[in-house]
Image (cartoon, helix red, strand yellow):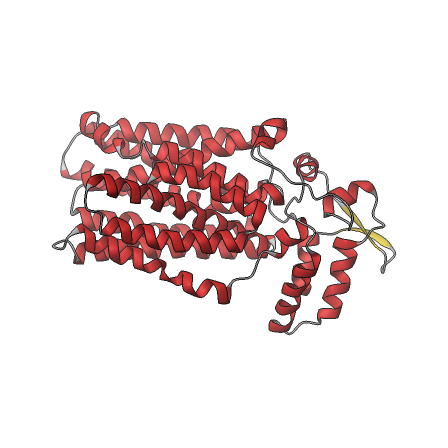
Length: 428
C-alpha cells in the first residue's frame, strides 16, 4: 500500500495540476472504491498485493488533490480552520476503525476490509457537490469558467456579484499592470500560461532547498506517526485500547493546532510540535531502557502518547503548510511529491516494531532524532501565514526573500499592500 501511495502521490497530483482538480479527484475516489472491494474478495495473496497497491495509488490521488482544493478555495485565515477540521475528520475515522476492529475481532479480515471500502461510496455525490478550483482555472486563464463558479458562490452567500466581478477584473485580469505584477498576479489575457513539472523543483535552487527540507520533515512525520501506531501493541495493556488511545490523543492535538495557528505562524507551530514530540519520545525511550517495572512501563506509555500527540498535530499542520509553499500550477504536484517521498519512509515503519523487539530503545531514538533534525532545518523555510498563495515560481522566490507585492488601487488613488487572496475571497 505504501508503494502504491508513493506512485499515486506523484502521478495523480501531476495530472491534477495539468487537467484540473475535480475530474482527477472523482476518478481516484471511484477507483479507490473498486480496489477496496477487490481486496476484500482477493482469492490469493498475490491478488491482495495488487489491490492493496492500487488502493494506495488511488488513496493518495484522493487525499492530496482533495487537500489542494481546500487550500485553494480559502484565504489564509480560513485555511487554518479547514486544516484543523480535516485533521479532526481523520482522527474520528481512525477512532472508528479501532472501535470497528474491536467489535469485529471474531470476524474475517475480509469483512473489515469490505466495510472500510464501502465508505468510499461518497464518490457518487461528488459530481453534484464539487466545483473546479477557481484558482486553478485562473492560473490556466480560464476566466469565464472561474467567474461562473464565483457567481454561484456570490449567490449562495448573498453577495453582490457585479461588485465581485469588478474586483476580479481589477486584480486578476487588468492589462495595465507592470510586467512584474503581470507575472505575479497571473496572467493578463493573451499571455502564455506558465506550466510547471516536478523537474522545475530541481532547476530552481530556492525551491529545491525548501523542498528538501519539507521532504525530510514529511518523512519524519510519516515514519514516527505510523511507527507509533504499529508499536502500540507492544505497550502495556490491551492492543485495541492502545490503538484507540493513540488515535484519541490526536483530538487535543487538533485543538492545539486550532489555537496555536491563530496566534502564531505555521513554521513556529511546527517547530514547537516536533520539538515536543521528539522530547516526549526521547523520555519514553529512556524510561523503557531503565527497567520493566510497572511504574516505568506506565510512564513510558504516557510519554509515548504525548509523543503521538505532538507528531499527530505536526502531521496535521504540515499538510496545511506544504501547499502554501508551492506555486499554483505546481501546488498539487508539490504536495504529492512530499507525500510520495514520505511513503518511502512509511515502508520502513512496520519494521520499527521488529526493531523494538530486539532493541527496545531503537525506534524511539530514531523518531526523536529525526524530529530534532527537522526542527533545525525548518529555520531555513519562509513563513506563509497571512500571505497570498504564490501563483508562479518567480513570485515564490520574491516571497521567500520577504518582499511584498504592491498593487495599485486605482479607485482609491494610492498604493496599498493588498493580499489579493483576501480581496477576492472576502468579497465573495
